[in-house]
Image 1 (cartoon, rainbow, N blue to C red):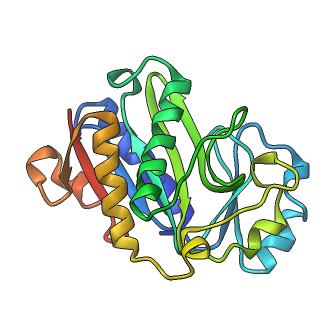
Image 2: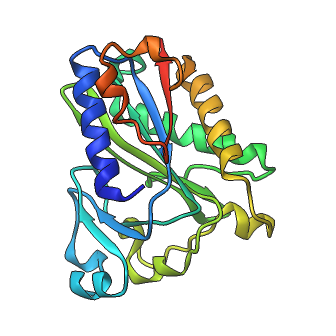
Length: 231
């Protein structure tokens, strides 16, 4: 899903969540080649100017999330929890740790031992970064979320300073295991581990009884994987 379209979807979901039309939800999807940067953006995190990126087929977005520069592309799974954070924790940093735990458990399912790195946000395998986090919290509700490298081309990461960390190395599940991974399998594992970590029951988007506004339902696009949370 194109990043701008997904961002609009997040805002639509957030408005519906705040107004009580839907429960908390988790959207899992992929983006075409896109560089994004957050509120703490420093110009040095983008090695080239915006026009050069765009002329080479990359979209570039300044976002309202936390964090610095990152890269999205097909084969990377992006997760957007639209939730009332205080339902699960009142500590913003604990919320980030919970998102990390979802990715760590998912990687463990593939036989990959991942961990946190002191002083940094995200998920690492032997000092190499594989999972990323950037969240927006406003009025107690979250947008944006996490991304996990699965089958994606890693080479464009060299065109930025990922997360503002000089010299950081990036990896993916495919690179570690030397085989392509079924993205739908990753979607399911992430959703299941999200359910465990946040202690919620996940209900698929097909259950329309959760949605009071049927017109709103049609804004959930077919190229995303969305589950609602019955907490």
